[in-house]
Length: 113
Length: 110
Image (cartoon, rainbow over all chains, first blue to last red; front, side, top):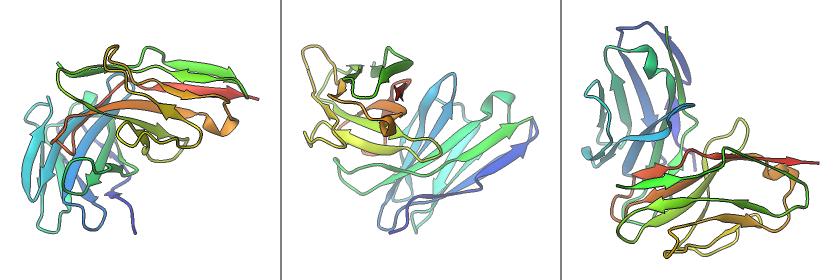
């Protein structure tokens, strides 16, 4: 079965712009989470969506938002980009219920110039 | 506060030597603990979880609640084990949320 798919893989944006990243979870998975990975801060949890509802939220400013569609696909949006938003953004999916393995995508590399 | 600490940024060993990647956590309840691995140019993938108590690729990890540790061990390192290793804490019931340590790069020299 296909893994977690993220698009685009690489993108460059200018400070002040906004960006939307897309994630297709593994078929049948209803939970989608987003993480930011940077050399300085490591892997940090952004938020999780389950059945189109945000279930958990990390400690990021309101410029970071997301949503999930009825087919479980998810998007995350970052508005008013700052240089510090340059990072690898990882999407992960898992089945419902605790104890399910969380599978990660390859990530979207965002560079803000 | 929930926290995961991996004290070593880099661990360098020779092939055939034992490996221990340290992980300590801070959590007041009963945590779910995982080790994830990221090989060069590959996605992050689950190596093992404490619930399973299994050995994957020769690696094992035991949860020590008294010491709040979940160290990853392998008796004989192989060159293909070279990768970035992340310890992660999952909060029971919060299936999609993981708190990661900073990661340890394991370098196995021939």
